[in-house]
Image 1 (tube, helix red, strand yellow):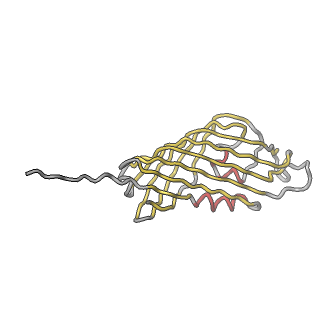
Image 2: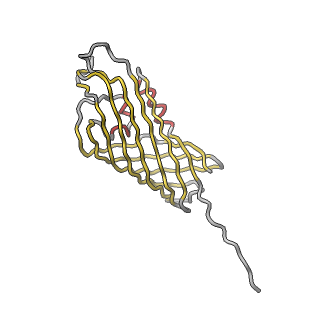
Length: 203
C-alpha cells in the first residue's frame, strides 16, 4: 500500500520592536534641554534558528544657549545610528523563547551645532562639527515570545572607528546628550550598548 505524507515547512516569524529604555533616558539626560532618541528594529526569520536583523536609531537634541557668542554652547544635535546583522537562537527556535546572540555592523552620524568656545561654568571647550563612526556590535540575551508579544533583554558591546569626534561610539550611547564635543579626533573606540530592553510584536 502506498502512503502519501505531507511535510510542513517551518514558518519563521517577523518581529517588530522598539527599545523604550533609551527613549525614556534621553529625556532625562538631555535636561534642561530637549532630547529625542528613537531606536527601533525588525527581525526577519530565515529558518528555525537564524534571523536577519535591521535597526535604526534617530537622535535629536535642542538646548538654549546664552546670547554671548564668546561662550561655547551646544544648541543642536541631529544624528542617526544604523545597524544590520544576524541573530542566532542558542536555545529554542525563532518561534519560541530562548537565549539569543546578535552580531551586527553599525554606522553612526551626528552633527553638533552651537557657539565655539569655553562652556560657561565648565572647564572645557566646545567644538561644533559633524562626526561619524563605523564598527561592529555584539549582543547577547534572552528573547520571550508569547502569542503576539515579543520582548528581549540584551547586553552588548561595540568596537568602531570614530571620525572627528571625542565620544565613543559617537551617538551609539546615551551620553551623547550630556557630553559636548571638547575636541575632534579620529581613532578606534569601544563602548557598551545600554538599551537593554526590546518590546514589540511578532507576526
